[in-house]
Length: 144
Image (cartoon, rainbow, N blue to C red; front, side):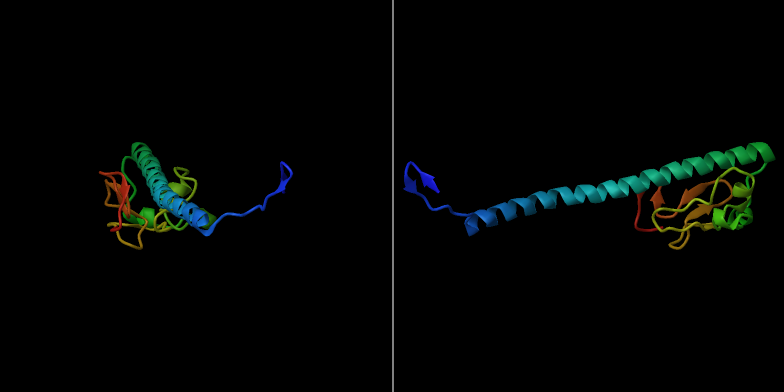
């Protein structure tokens, strides 16, 4: 490179400069990555809250129309249309739900009397909930 008639040698970045940039990027990544992890959990918790509210509303509508809540056996039964899922038969067959809801935490559509690791939803005849979800705190839990 020619500057004022004097030839100057162009140089690249030194090892120290590159290391400083790498350290700064590492610090920024350590700050940003946990925020994305929390965002995914918050999204799942929001999805669960929304699904629970929808199902609870439809259970109330079912009770208002029929005079009683569906039994556990009716919720455990598969819908007539096999493509609609594996549970919530009476709710899907009578158009209260389009398909069997899936718990986004464990991917299960099953319904049982109590929460468990392999169960997506639990129903005791009057209270509906999702496995791995604490409705009091609104947070996803590690224990069903």
